Image (cartoon, rainbow, N blue to C red):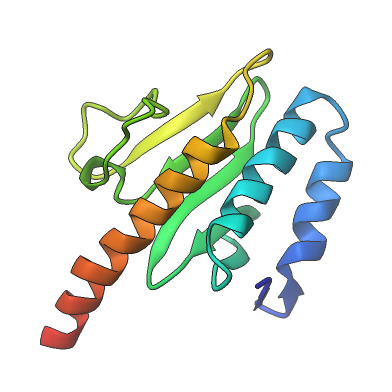
Length: 135
């Protein structure tokens, strides 16, 4: 469910970013994006924070972006969700975020990534929505 942010069509911005990155990083990002959007039909894709793809469902799920030497996916509440397939490879020192850095030659395990996304949605629905109702 692409959305507009600040009058900008997120899907168009993201597709342009991918088109401007025709190497392995663009292909990796396409696989990441596909997994996020396939994980839940109500996933919201936005373009925020000075040009970053952001995925939300009942609260922030993750940011995903193309960097010089990697594709970086950062889960906002990653420390609170199960990772049985051991996808997270950074952020272990913090108490909130966890993420995945995809380097050249890495493949995206779409099934495992979709499971992480679904766990993040469950976390948002169980804890974030409950806390929002209290305020």
